[in-house]
Length: 475
Image (cartoon, rainbow, N blue to C red; front, top):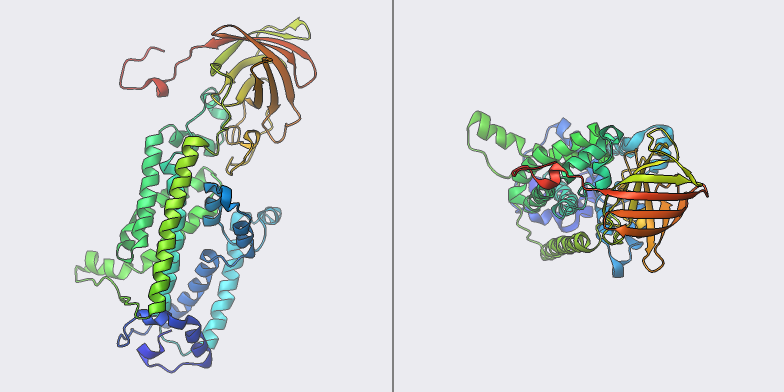
């Protein structure tokens, strides 16, 4: 890539590689001469160049299948989020699970390809003595790839969408019934302002990566923030281990470039020079391409920011958007439970008798009953158009049964269906009446086709997180 700069003899393969670069070498001054690299540096660069390009550049046809499947007239922010976090899939995740390779199986394939490719590259381009310009362009690719991921995840935290505020049902679920990842999500979701601050930090890091002169500061933020996220993903089993590890990997790759000058400045305390290559972009086509790509990136940021803002205010993607039964929101004790005309007293062991009920602000009703919950082992991630398919509420914990319901306020009926994908056959058809503001009476047929009569009494339970800690609280 730097034949004119180093005046070194080129192999035919090296000439071909140079021509493949086209105008890219015009970023350097014609008189600039680069220091020769050591043999191990050349081999290591070849390996990491192939490996990082495989992970960072959308070469997988499945990426373009996702891209062209998007309805751009009804674009949802999650469509763009899926594209930015996409990783190459030589083998599907389902197949990897069968082989027991886990989420990093495709990385293993990429490593093998990179190793073989580096060996072949070294033989074909054996006379090359440095890849300074190619190194520059690899850093550009990695910077923008990393910035795109940080932008998307930053915005869904800035507008608290990734970790919603805990629902009333969550507050009434035993701590031991939560998976580790759900505890972590609840812990962050309970403080939306802090979640927004974390999102701001991610976006700030992305914009620091956007400018070549501030990459070091951006990488520093990433290590401090995303490094912790990667650890959390591993120990809490959040489900994004591959992506978070990838972010830390490419951040480390960017940081390696700065290690020599930081060592000179901080350890040896001698002058440290900012860059070995100062781009001049002498070629007009290259300048125009750069301007177009930077503009496209900024437009992407604005589009994604607007879409997440709109979703936060109108349709939080993890929470059902249909409002619940008017003025029913709350926690209810089951004062009376009649099954097939048999009154069943309060019991924590009876498999049929309801213990308590929660009406959420949206179209979800949850019931605590001594019947095993078939746990939803997913992360609840993903965008679903239908409320019944939005499973974040019930994913990652047991203890309560979640039902989606449709209310007919004229006929005073509730049609309930279990939201759990493993128990969708459970349906209840009930009529409701409200003798007073704190009582709801339900009559109808349960999932076993038995008749039930249920009297619910609202409990005005108070929660420290809602009441606040800086004023007197009576609980």
